Length: 384
Image (cartoon, rainbow, N blue to C red; front, side, top):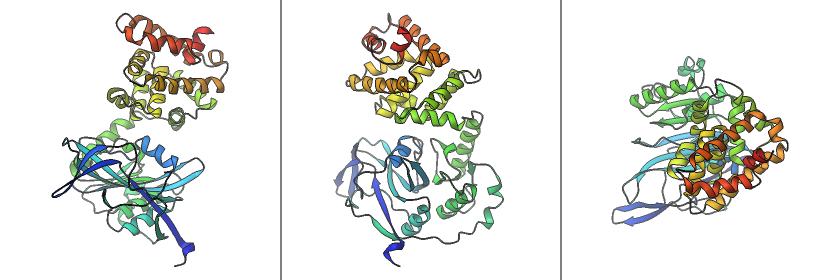
């Protein structure tokens, strides 16, 4: 086949230090950099999808065989086909850790090519060294995948959980998503024990019958809490730092819905990782922006947010990230207090919460003063 029909498949893996042992290797500490990359700059849309936990398996599960996930991601004017192969390992403290090996190529037709090229799952291997600038050159592959045995299942609404007893393959799952959503952000998961966000997949094939029960129960519970797409879009825009006036309008209108109470906001923000970031002190920019949004929407959380900032040795950096988000929202809405009364009232109630808590938590005084005297939302509301 000519080079014109070949595509570049890039890859990268979980960044982790590895220690050689007499019998092979064991895991050391994780790193912030991905390893074994074939590309210098991983596409931001792919990184955002990972950061949004769209490939994340839930902790506390054991994988007897590799789990595989396929997803089409879009962003920044680009489209990428991504396949993640996940295995379970243990670090030098004997703690379980998921090890991801990602494969991706341009366009929304590449998942089938990646799967056929792989044949069997290529799992995390720290010594399968890759070189930046040397992707896998692969022939574009597309063949008919028969779905006769799955037609009845495809009549259901996603997310569809297949019976664990029904034989299936990743290629079949990929074809099912193509049938369900011909154009869009398709996603499937194969041989998974538990997913953090199962509702973000169209088709799921559980690792076993027990996993099937767990996944079905999680989806059933979350279906009772339907999150409109426009609210999801607004939240993700805030997390990425690219908030626009229409996103602020969405949040303002949502606050006017009496059914969307504190528990509602807590639940949907926790799906994006808010509670995990707060409890485990994860101070990435996306998480700082997410928790800033939580403090805006849930006034009772603002004192906790300030304490979370104060706990960081680099709180000035994280404060600046939060302030930059607030400033960008004010740039989009210069008359914020006038145009967004519900959000403004929520901000004021947060201030009252902090004042009542300062006696018990005096360490948050510095952060409180900075956010009130700076150029952010809380200062804008107080000075209006």
